[in-house]
Image 1 (cartoon, helix red, strand yellow):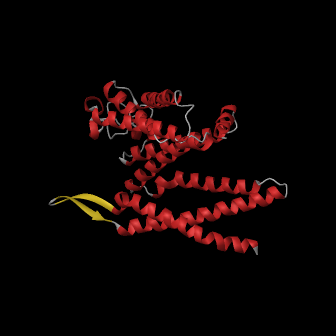
Image 2 (tube, rainbow, N blue to C red):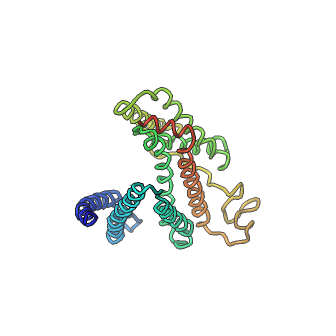
Image 3 (tube, one colour):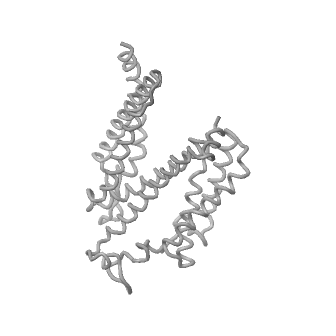
Amino acid sequence: MSTTMSKQVNLPFRIRDALGAAIVAAVVGLPMLGLTTHDGSGGLQVQTRWPLLGAFVIAAFVGRMALQCLLEYVATIRKSRIQKGKQATASSSRLTWIGTCAVAFAIVLPAMFSGNRYVVDTATTVLIYVMLGWGLNVVVGLAGLLDLGYVAFYAVGAYSYGLLSTHFGLGFWEVLPIAGGLAAAFGMILGYPTLRLRGDYLAIVTLGFGEIIRLILINWGDLTGGPNGVSSIPKPTFFGLPMQASADGPTFSSLFGIEYSPQQRIVFLYYLILGMALLTNLFVSRLRRLPIGRVLISTES
């Protein structure tokens, strides 16, 4: 009886929460999915894709409802097992199974949409933000520090890669760790003087730092290209092998004996971001068990 009552009580909350997620999906998806541009006879024209946007909104609504049901189910199982003095191993294994299925789907996604570059590009962008979210979980989730300028470190790393590769002629695999190190260095530079700040004060400082980085990147046009960004960035290579139809030396397609396709570079970037996202998740999950992770958790309390 109590379980039935709780379900009836939670149903309106689930619907409101799912509607909120659907509204956010509609607002975010309108410029990204609902509208598209193409070259017409009279210039650039805008076309609408309402069925695709509607499917995205419905998927957000249904997905949020399913997530709420799953979380409540896991919480109920965990609570009942704790009350009985048992460990919630079943719920943990179930979540592990769901994560394994999600990773398996991410691995086969380029093969499922091999002829659709838009889907692979969008999935790559999603994985980038997933990786950023897992990284932000260290600051907000473990330490409980509200960081509103987290994206500034992402911008530092991205512009570092673009500037070093264009002005110094460094390769993709040479610049990648350097850009990550520079982003981490800026994080330490900002983090050291703000460690004692809490609440609104920390949020204001990090928000101001993010705004400063944005203004510098936009207004320093001679270095960063201004609003247009850094142009003529060299394309990434597969450990020195260019992904081109022809080159002075061996290429990616010639090494593996396959026909060249422009989609190869897109798929390579997708799997690279997927691997980096999984490494980020592994690092964050292991960080909880390390002494520094316990220090971060104690900082929140």
